[in-house]
Image (cartoon, rainbow, N blue to C red; front, top):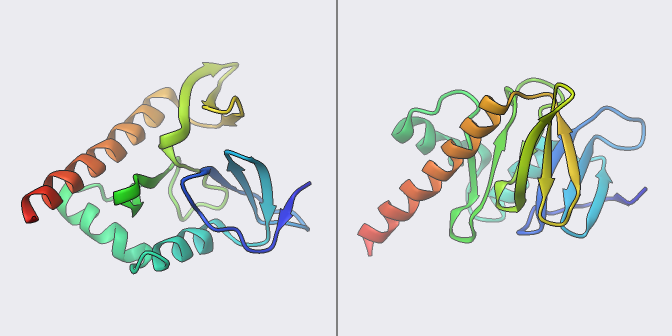
Length: 155
């Protein structure tokens, strides 16, 4: 078990899954492997936003206002690098997995679970419908496209 004291969300992060365990709070799916940390998913997301001169709430507010994605709002951590994440359930619900879609290769339903396969072959089973997952992928893509259109007109 690879336990990390201080993990930082980067282009290599594929998913964050909150889980209660004596030794860790979050399972991190990364391009380089699966890691575990005492850090919470919320603290990882907050720190990632702060490192990019914003906050978790500061990244969510414009998406909620401009695109009216009030629930399960996609988080544009660093839109210039296309680092974004979306929750599978309500982020207030304990155990809510967050997916960073850049690394998603495919997804399919198997035995009542959604299986997400990442580009490196790692698979993540989720309690989520295909419809919800597709909707979250689409909303995240819409956020990135909107951001790129808006920043292109500013310069």
